[in-house]
Image (tube, rainbow, N blue to C red; front, side):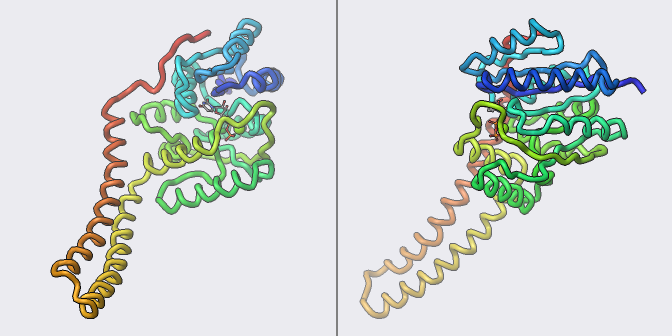
Length: 315
Ligand code: UDP
Ligand code: MG
């Protein structure tokens, strides 16, 4: 069998410190893979600059000038991790047999790619990189992340536990993924929807090679919200539950109102007013908020905005 053309897609946001180290590691890795005839020499490393504010693009341009293996994609603005991945995958789809996405900081062990290719060779269309431990993550990140995976499962979203955006997709899986029209993207929840034959490869997650996390708490929360509201309709059902809870509170309130009515000659109409305010006010506010979430999503989807705006593509 002919060795596959592999495209490695890497989103880079302010990664000037990490990139030189990452690039060196990937050159060694792909050299070795080519020598072992695991991949075709036409394989590429696609570096997507997600509107970085530092020297990332200069580093990418230099890498591209020095070694034709590196491709550079520069997005015109910071489109976000998911959109940067999407951009890289879109621009690779027509020229590759399979694509691997990995973060620029190499927290995910590059050697797992050997396992990815092996599974691909055996016929898998989707290979997930799964963290066998999260020792190097802070306790906070670990607990929140694992809590999130559990919550998503409860909400009926199929996700591979402890897998992130380190995965291999065959060309046909990639094309299927790219045919998804949604603007609100949560890739790790979308890939399992593809079907196809899947496999998992386990690895130890390490520290960032350089630089700092580009996911501060605020972005993490936004990311989690995105995952939930773009993939699950269950929250809207929980409104019912909350409604029941409110009604229960309302009953308690009713008792209190009636007791007051009996004991202290309240103004006529006070009791019924109090009860309606408590019961209906709470219910309506919550229902409105939830419906608003979804209306907001429909609004965004109807805009059909491009997922990224391409400024340059070195190839
Ligand atoms: N990233 C991106 N755009 C953003 C934020 C992050 O392309 O707006 C990239 C970043 O350069 C890295 C990957 O997404 O390659 C994951 O980010 P990071 O390693 O900081 O996240 P963490 O591992 O801390 O969750
Ligand atoms: Mg990281």
